[in-house]
Amino acid sequence: MNRAFQLSVSTRDRILDAAEGLFADQGFHLTTLRQITQAAEANLAAVNYYFGSKQELIRAIFRRRLDALNAARLERLDAIEEDDSRADLEAVLDAFVEPALEFTRGGDAEGQRFMQLLLRAFADRDTALHEAMRQEYAHVMRRFADAVSAALPGADRTRLRHQLDFIVGALTLTMAESALKDTRIIAAELVQFAAAGLRGSLDHRIPESARRTLEATS
Amino acid sequence: MNRAFQLSVSTRDRILDAAEGLFADQGFHLTTLRQITQAAEANLAAVNYYFGSKQELIRAIFRRRLDALNAARLERLDAIEEDDSRADLEAVLDAFVEPALEFTRGGDAEGQRFMQLLLRAFADRDTALHEAMRQEYAHVMRRFADAVSAALPGADRTRLRHQLDFIVGALTLTMAESALKDTRIIAAELVQFAAAGLRGSLDHRIPESARRTLEATS
DNA sequence: GTCTATATTAGGATAGAC
DNA sequence: GTCTATCCTAATATAGAC
Image (cartoon, rainbow over all chains, first blue to last red; front, side, top):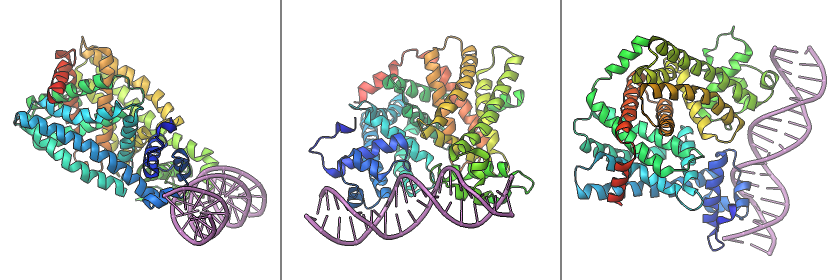
C-alpha cells in the first residue's frame, strides 16, 4: 500500500503522500518523521530539508487538498449559477457535497484518508492550522450561504449559517467513517436530507415545536 | 480556571477533571502527565497510582461522561415512550440532542469541553478507546433508531442509520464549536432540521432528484 | 540533494523513602 | 497515599560528510 508511489515522483511529493496517509491513520503527534520518511523511502533529514519542520509539512498537506476541494466546489457552483441565477436547492447542496466525495472514489481511497484528516483538523483546535483552515473555508461558506439563500427566499440568514454547519458536520463525520461502501448513495441521501431540513425550517420560523416537546417531556 | 476544584475533592477526581480539560484543549498526545498532575495539584506519580497508565486515564474519563450522557438520553426516551408508544418525531430527536446540551449549560462550560473531547475521540480512529465507544454507542443508537422508526412508519431502515449518523455528525461538530452562545436555540434548530430531513426522505424513496441534478451539472 | 551521526529535549513509567 | 529521583525510550532537529 505504501508502495503506490511511482519512482518518478519527486521526494517532496512522496513525503506529502506518505505523511498524509500516516497522519490520517494515526494522528499528527503519533506519527513520527521516521515513519514518514521510511514510508516515503526518503532520508530522515528530508522533511526538514523540504518543509522546514513537521508543522510546516502538515500545513502543506492541507493546502494541497483544501485548495483542490474548495476550488472544485466553487467551480461546480459557478456552473450551476451560470445556467440559472436562482439555482435549485438540491443542486447547490450537491455542489458542496459531491466534490468531497470525488476524493473518495480515487484508486486507493486516498480521498477518504483526507476526510479523516479533515476530521482531525476539526478536533485540533487552536492551532495555527485551524485558523488557516477557517479563513480558507470562510470564503467558500459565504458563497454557499448566498447560493442557498437565493434558492430558498425568505430563509433566516443566521439560522442558515447554523444549518450549513450541521451539513458540514454530517458530511465530515460521515465521510470519515471507514466502512463506507456506497458513498454515492450516501451523498445523495445527505443532499436530500439537507434540502428537506432546510425547507422544513421555512415552515417553522421560531423553533417552537421543539421547545414544546422539550417542556412536555422534562 | 484550573482552580475550580474544591480542596475536599479527592485526588483521583481532581486528576480526572484536570485531564479532561487539558485533553479537550490540547489533545491526548500533546497533554503530558506532568501538565495534568500539576493542574490537579497532585504528584506526577499519582496518575500511575490511580489509573495504571495514561491510556487507562483516558478511558476512565470517557466512561464517566458517556455513561451519564447516554443514560440521560435513554431516560428521556423512556419517559416519552411511556406517555405514548408511538412518540412524536421531534420529541425523540430532542431526547437525543438535549442531554448533549445539558452538559454545555454547566457552570464553567465543562460540558462543552467534553464535546470537544468526543470530537477528538471520533478523529482518533482504531484505538481501543474508539472500539469501546462504538459499543457503548451501539446500544443507544439502536434504541433511537427503533424510536424514530416507530415515529416514521415506512422509513427505510438502512437509510435511517445513515441519517442518524448525519445527526450525530451535526450535533458533535456543532457542539464542539467554541463560540456557541445560544445552544438552546441551536439545539431546537437542529431538532427541527433533522425532523424535516427525516420526513423529507419519505417523499423521495430513491435518491433520484439528487442524481438528476448531479448529472445536469457535471 | 541525500546521507550518517548526534545533540537536545522530553515523555511515560517506576523504585523506594516517607 | 504521596513524594523525589531516576531509568529508559524516543522524538525533533541539525551538523557536516559525501
